Image 1: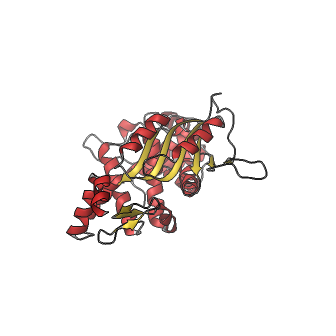
Image 2: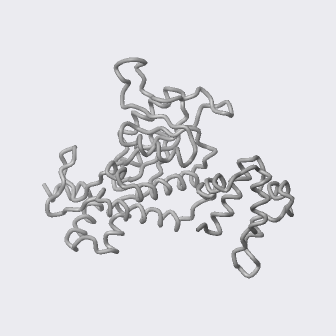
Image 3: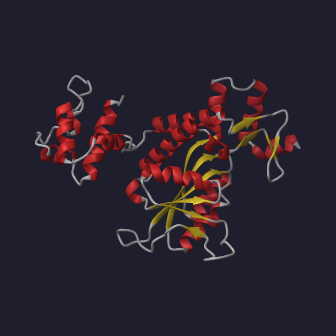
Amino acid sequence: MFTHSQIWSGLDQLAKSKGYSPSGLAKIAGLDPTSFNKSKRISPDGKPRWPSTESLAKVLSVTETTMSNFVLFIDDMPSGKLTEAEKKEIALDTAEALIQTKSILFNASKPFTLKSGKKSPVYIDCRRLVSFVAERSKLMDHAARLLESDIGGDNLDILAGGETAGIPYGAYISDRMKKPMIYVRKEPKGYGRMAQIEGVLPEKNAAGNKPNVILIEDLQTDGGSKKIFVEALREAGAKVDHAFVVFHYGIFDASEENMKALGITLHALCTWWDVLAVAKDNNYFNDETLASVESFLSDPIGWQDDCG
């Protein structure tokens, strides 16, 4: 069953796809031009006002749209800016999904050894998430909604997945945003075209400018690895001002510094602080573990010294 906002969003998306405003769509369907105005969607007493089945039938007929195709428009993401409260809800929802899928682990008594050799009471594996359909789907809906809100779909031409963990997320999000996708290697492959970028990166977008490309990856610690991908895309002729990750550590100053140096605005679904908040609220771990994790997040270097 569809919600009030989904039905109206579907009509808005249908109108846009046919080159009409909502009022223009109502007019060609033989309805009062104000029928689909946003001011008419809520009654004076604050109750939701739905489009009639007769109005909907006329719209589908005049646009030669089947009900099945209309449902696809309903499934499109809503437009408009997310509020800070909505972004926080997304962050906590993401943190919950990562914990439930065991993509995130806490262990203060036996800290994890990271690739760098350093110890940590927390561990994140965003690659694991791709195996959980419901959670993955929900988070990718959040991702598309966040990018639509903060950047705007019209300001993005292509999504670029970073090798390797960013590739599936680039595919999921580009599908939702109905955008082309490419992926960028860490270094050119050593045979064939010697390509570092796979897929089609046009020289110009529809406006005649460099194509606007966003880099998609699974996570970010200090952001150092982003430089390889961003520079490769820029050297190939792309305009790259944004990057997206499912998870941002959010505890290293170098992350912000590196992004600023690259001229990149980072977008992320959640951070370790969101995970800690969810873990505390739901008593997922004992007090000792939570205290150790909070100590690590507040001072990673100091925690390392104490652990060492």
